[in-house]
Length: 556
Image 1 (cartoon, rainbow, N blue to C red):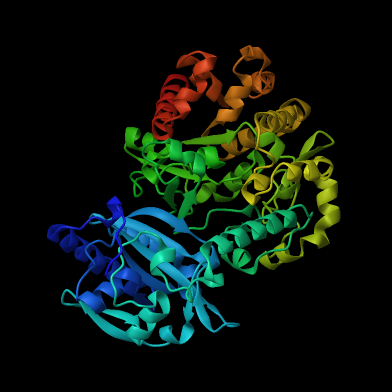
Image 2 (tube, rainbow, N blue to C red):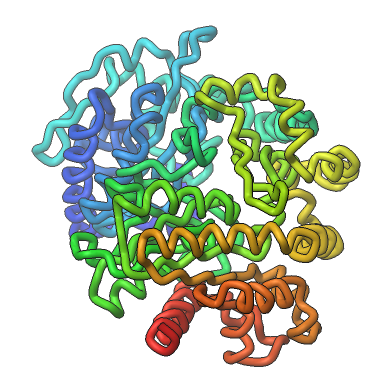
């Protein structure tokens, strides 16, 4: 006797839909065979194959299980292969204890679920369920629609461990209904959810510390570390970015984007094998991490010019790091034009060496910085000379206190931030839980344009010297976030925090073309309409690309 719920997910799939679903599973199996030593058909897909000899017609996805210790380090390879084979990544969780990749294709969603080995209980677990580890020590073959797939062994024991009475069909979207109570960690999802809320608060308390405890799995997955720059995008990687605010975009329903880098560490670009014409350096506003590869500003310009436009933007960078990367890597990917694209928070970032002080939670982000000494630009190198030093940051305390100008602010305000932020995500966002907090943070960051204008001029002179030495035309493009546009929307243009600094830089260093996102937005409407352009991220990047292309043709 089956229990049924009225839910579109439980609709009966047609024969044609199930046939296409099988095509996708065959492609998925090839991806997994190419990237992993072991994987298993699992969940409702295995249940249907074993009990019914076919897919369960009301099952809404296809599930496979991977061993987390093998799949977790190969996440980028799996993502890369999935995209190359025509799948669209729809969800992702890179955490060790809940590793997951969801990909859509062939009219179906395919879930790759990781199970880690819990040696204490001798189980293979995820956040919500655990089943005996011995079921994954060996595999056996299950045949589905004439194709052989690996499965946990013995299959009946696996099905009993996960579902209990697996022989009785149950139509439900609630996993607490169809999972065995023994399989559910703690015996109740509601209790489990409460436990994780407690753990989240405990983790948030950890981030109140000057040097928070490091989760081993997070450290091992941090493959961005760079001895000169602090961190940098590794080459030949495919990554997933998840941000809740992306859900406002109709094309980003899941709040998820996928980006990839090439062998040089540039974000994948249009016409990758052509001779470079323009090279981008900068931060996340340069990288355009909130959109897919083909929707970045650099990609659009490459499409317009029908040539390679490299994109060396890195999330979280300050202008200082972007300049250092240009200095180090330009010779490997030379171009006629170099565009330095940074967010308006960049001057605050340039006064940081341990980003946890500026953005609590960025504990792996230890960086170099420039400072002025006797009128000249001097480099303060990062004290982290090898990745393992990130586990002993307390030994660099004196360096951080001496060279990071945000330490006193962090020390004074951290308890106030935590009082209004019970969840870790809000804590990491440095107090962005109210409009007042956002304004306070923006005012704090924008103040560095005035107090450190001479540092900016010094960095622009360094940029100009590189342009003379390497014979490229330098462009500086300042971009702004939604919050910054809201902050300045009622200000006269001459009163915005960065205006006088940029105007003075134009006079001091006329060889650099200075561009301001503010000018572009004024062209597209009144200050009150600033954020309308931002609502469609793909469109706004295309418009910026057109703006930059026009400026290059007009002035250079």
